Image 1 (cartoon, rainbow, N blue to C red):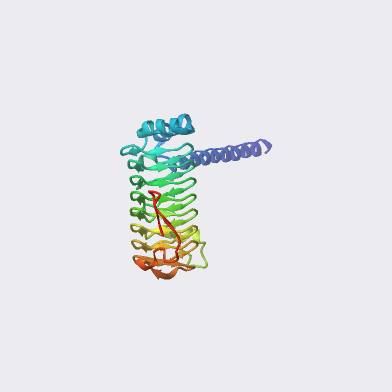
Image 2: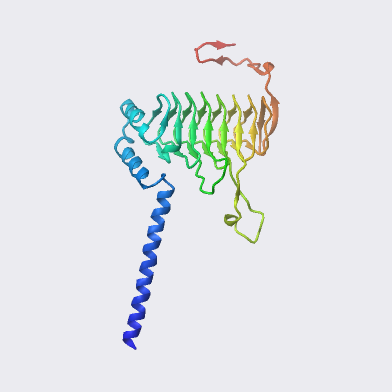
Length: 272
């Protein structure tokens, strides 16, 4: 009887160890599937990050401008600072003159991130597609001459399309995904998500700490005030602010420097 008990106990321990082993393998496989298009891609990308991802100054920028072409799509010359994190790098497209500042994080799976000509992504910004639910319109596309401010977050599960000369200020958020939470008997974690997408047209300025929610279109030439939460479409050439955001005024020539403040241009000239 004692021998039988020891045999049963040993079998149970072996079964538990086997389950732990399978669990560890599954965890590793899940991790790798969230990082790259396969083990080979993961190894190549991580080797490049290890050897040249940390190198500062123009030396590192120059090396990455040449060598990172092995893992991402660079059309012309783009500048990538040190300590930039890239995941699914082969889904990332950088146009000529694009700039990624230090500590930027791009996660591009699977429909990609496209950053336009001369567009700047500032320190600590996060561009995150992270679509593992087969959402059809996921991705992030940013036009040319735009600026993504420090610690801005863009979530592209439903698709984010930004035009030319779009400026987002620090800590703003553009979130093209939303949880469903209609059933009080079921955790929201198990109720799925919606992902309608966000469109921001040309010449839009988004103030610091503003939030653009899923399903919204921000019209051409509009301004979103600092701290606003935009839950509905913004017409062209409109200033909105508040929680939820409401129209504050319409942009017009009569508003330009009408308070006597000097206006500065890139050439260094001023208008009084």
